[in-house]
Image 1 (cartoon, rainbow, N blue to C red):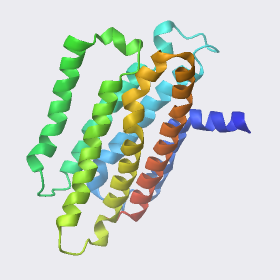
Image 2 (image 1 turned 90 degrees about the vertical axis):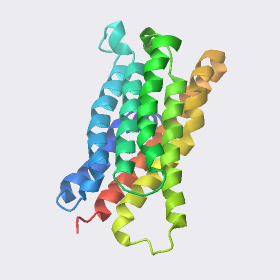
Image 3 (image 1 turned 120 degrees about the vertical axis):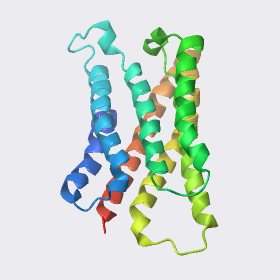
Length: 230
């Protein structure tokens, strides 16, 4: 039973995405165009997570070359894609609140990525360590987007209409995901390097990330189910 649970969590970054994608296919005619960035994210995430999990799970049994055994660069690409697509999603909501900051955030993030890999870390470091600064920065920016969304709602006096229910589900799921994982991302690399005990802790705490990712996918699935183009 423990082995089965371990396998399920190990592949959760792949099969969890099939939950919202299945609902998307069943209700694609009813899903608002507002959710387009999220749909694109799901497809990109499915491709990247499949590569990452496949290289990790079968690195020895298939005798993969050394460069193909390391999935850390894939997670970096995933992190960048997630930030850009969800920032696009939030900017499409047209909330007249912190507009310039919301538009500027992804640009600043890309500048940070370029500077980071040009002057602080080399691209070779992608294969040697989990990139805590980049992942933590992504989580912090996404948390900012989520909190400003709720702050905007609190400032509104009018009733929050049910047509935005699908957006609420996505923001709620994303809030849970980034809030849970910010500190995991921030300290993960340090834990991997400190000691064997810390390495084991880091290895097992990734299950928390996987569970929160399942929650995010379920919330997105609920958003697709509740979405209505009308």
